Amino acid sequence: MILILVPNTRPESPEYRQLLAYLANLPGITTRIHTEIGAEQTLTELYLIGNTKALSTEEISILPCVERVVRISEEYRVLGRHQNDGRSSSFEYNGVLFSQDSLHVFAGLCAVDTIEHVEIMMKALRAEGQVCTRMGAYKPRTSPYSFQGHGKNCLPYVFDLAGKYGIKVIAMEITHEGHLEEIRTALHQTGNATGVMLQIGTRNTQNFELLKIVGRQQTFPVLIKRGFGITLDESLNAAEYLASEGNRKVIFGLRGMKTNMGDPHRNFVDFAHVPVVKRLTRMPVCIDPSHSVGTRADSPDGILDIMHATAQGVIAGANMILVDFHPVPSKALVDGPQALLMKELPQYLEDIQIAREAYLK
Ligand code: E4P
Ligand code: PEP
Image 1 (cartoon, rainbow, N blue to C red):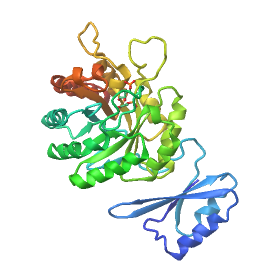
Image 2 (cartoon, rainbow, N blue to C red):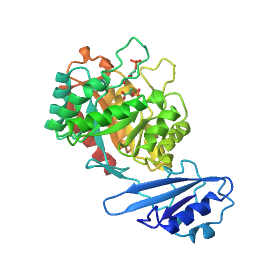
Image 3 (cartoon, rainbow, N blue to C red):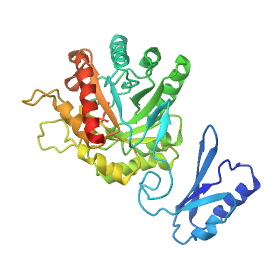
Image 4 (cartoon, protein in one colour):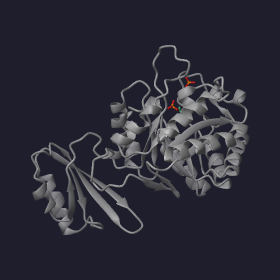
C-alpha cells in the first residue's frame, strides 16, 4: 500500500508525526518514506510494507496528511504498470528527458583506454548533435588478468572532455559502492555540467546490497541490465530493489541472454522483450546491441548484425541504445570485436532514425 501525502507536507509538523505514530503501531507493518524535492513542491510517499491486506483503505485515507491511498498487490510495486495510480513514468536528468516515449543513443567507448580516444569519440558525437555517451571506467571482466578499467584515474579527463563537447549524460558502470563516491568527487572537482547515469551490469543484476546502496541515492539515474542467466521476472525484481529504496529514475536494459548452445552471436538477442518490459513496468527500456551480438559480422545484404539488432529493438519501441564505438577497434582493451567504427556513426544514427520513424507511424 502506498500513501501519497499532501504536497509540501512538513516532516516536523504535528500532523505528520501523528500519522507516523499511527503507522508505527500497526502490527507487522513497516513504513518506508520516499521524498522527492522538486523545484516547486516536495512530494512524499509512504510505502507500507508487510501484510497490508487487513488494512482498510477508507480508514487510512482519512489519516492526517494523506491525500490518496494506492493499494498495490501486484509485483514490481513501485515500477509496475498499475492502472490509474497517477504516477509519472518519465524523469528528467541533466536536461535530458527519459520516458517510455523518448529515444536516446548512448554511443561511446566500452572501456576508456586513452585520453585521445575519449576525445575523438566525444568530438564525433558533438558533430552529430549527440548529448549522451557511454564510457566504461570500471570493467567487470571474466578473467582477473584482463584489463579492469582505468577506474577513478580516468574520471577527471572523461568529465572534462564531456564538458568541452557538450555531453550531458554519460552511462558508466559501477561494480562497487566505493565507485559512487569516486564519481561524485570527480564530477565535483571538474565542476562542469556533465551528469552520470550509473550502470549496473549484467554480472551484478542480483548484487542486492549494491542495488540497495545505489537505490538509496537519488542524485544519479540508474541503468540496470537484465541478468544474462536469470528470468525476466528476477531481473525486473532487481530493478524494483532500486526503486523500493527510493530511486525511481531507473531504466531497464536488454543485452542478450546466454544460451550455451553455440550461438553465432555472443548472446541471444532478446529485443522482442522491449514491449513486454514496457507492458509490465513503467521503466524506459534500453537495448545494447553491442553486447548482445558481440561481433562486427554482417549479412549478405552488407548490413552489420549489430545494425539489424538495433533496428529490431527500435522497431520494438526501445527508448535508449547503448552501443560500442572505437577509433581503432584492434587497439581496444575491451570488446574490440564488437566496436563499430567512427566513420560508421553517421549512418548508424541515420538508420536508427529511419527505424524510429517506422515505429512511430
Ligand atoms: C565489457 O563491457 C565487459 O566487461 C565484457 O563484456 C566482459 O567480458 P569478458 O571479460 O569476458 O571479455
Ligand atoms: C557494458 O555495457 O560495458 C557491459 C559490461 O555490459 P553487460 O553488463 O551487459 O555485459
